[in-house]
Length: 353
Image (cartoon, rainbow, N blue to C red; front, side, top):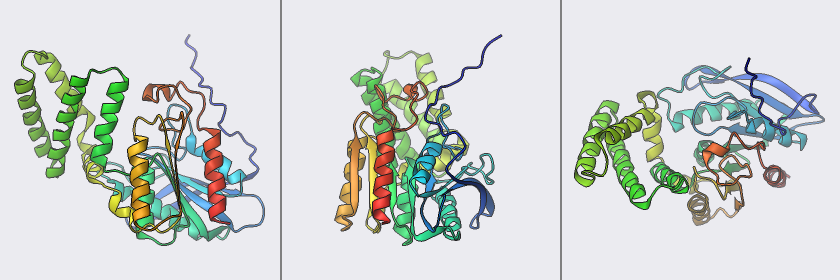
């Protein structure tokens, strides 16, 4: 008989907890479904400062669970022990949450996060003037979107948040990962050329069918002209199949909106304090370009209440890592760097003091 592999996750919080934990439900009135989540509230006399946690891209549960890690559970536990109430929720279509992710764009997902915020503000144990939002990756983009259009956020924490447009993020990400994985420069150039074309066709076409046809035409033409003889027919076919499989029809609307999304215009209207943290070894949202863009955007808008840091040795999930590549995420036992937890907690408590 085979034994189940038990992943060692030493940071995962275990009850009993020194705070209140409550299963909650709230409604996205705009789209008419309920979302389920967990609210953790410090013991003692409120009202408390609070945070909504917003997950990165892809459908995830309230703990933002990935490879047996539960980063949001770890963050919520840490902050609540420090006196900050935290609401985390299942993404639409996951576990206790209604709705469906199919066809939903980042802007649609932002309405879920807004519904979470609205729910928090109704609670007597929460101080509405000290409530903010913490977003990871795409969740940070959602935090920027909401804070730019609503005045009621006391603060924003961006964890591995994008400062540049989605097209650039995806192109840089695939190039960086391929380079770290040992791909040769000419192949990197070809890949970037192909993917640039694929995203341009996407921006021009709302229809998935048209995008698919034009993408096949564009890639066939590129491979036959540029690479006569350097790739076999089978390799070219496999490349095309993989490309189309990586962007299935249900994900197309999300992908297209993400490719076109540029946070730059949002920074002009974000007036609350912002903490932006990116890991130095993040392969998915490259730290320098994105932190620089966040800094520039906020400073140009006259928002000087910004702390922005690139944290040494950390990957996209804020784990201490070797390369930062995705294949390490599940192997690393650490769920979330303890020093980063302290930075987040100390900074929030300073803002809401």
